[in-house]
Length: 77
Image 1 (tube, rainbow, N blue to C red):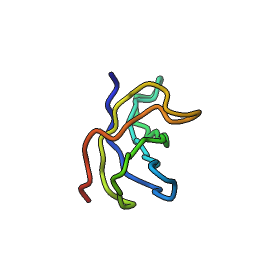
Image 2: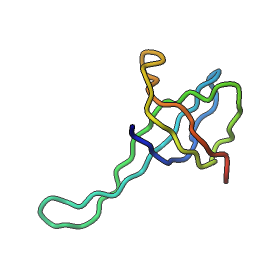
Image 3: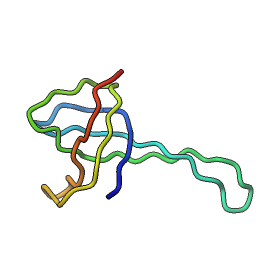
């Protein structure tokens, strides 16, 4: 099961938040670390999360067309 940590960037949908996950990968030739980010939709259930909070999300079965993650823990600034 994949678990990612990221920041909440949007909480405007009902029971869904958008989490931006940032990872650093080395360039193939030059080996310099490059920042890559991806925005993932996560199921928040009935809880509310504020923009800017750090949360951990885990992979789950498809919950909708684009939602494949569920909030495992989090809520710290």
